[in-house]
Length: 234
Image (cartoon, rainbow, N blue to C red):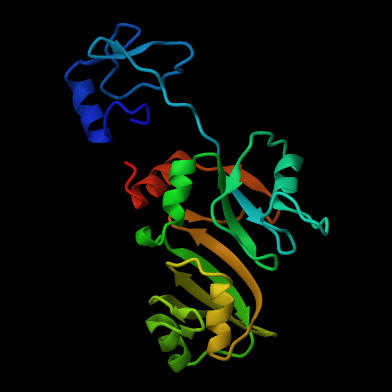
């Protein structure tokens, strides 16, 4: 599919019709994993050249780390973390997280996917959990859900709910489909509940899960396919 030959549905049809051969043989109906460096795949007699592989990573950015390649003040950056994990390929972050915000950051060298994920037209949801001062009441939550008036305009409708209590305040889950500068912090401050700690817990279908701060992992194939489907790349 990613070699640019056909969609998933069309690929299934070609396989069923016997048009796809692996080293001259039809693959079994149950499917077959292939290494393009060791076998030759043909479709209708034509050799298929696989697309260049991209790097897709999930990083748990700690608070106090910049999403920047360098910093005049020599503060740590996510690229310092990537190097510490042995990542040498040139990659970039999809979107940004504030210096004081922790959580899920997608990192890749796939420019097409990254650009689509950042475009407002696709409205990819981002989930955050914030520790805020006080406890938002139903009126505050309704304002967050319906849209908050900020200096750069009214926000889109969001998902908002109180999910826990803490000694220093309350935990609020907020899901937005925009990416304005410090938007979550500004929304919560606008309803009278300033953010004390903020973590992004999901980006589209990809969740942070139990990944520890400072650690990273490869994006799983189902997650990648779900991301691509979200921005109509399948």
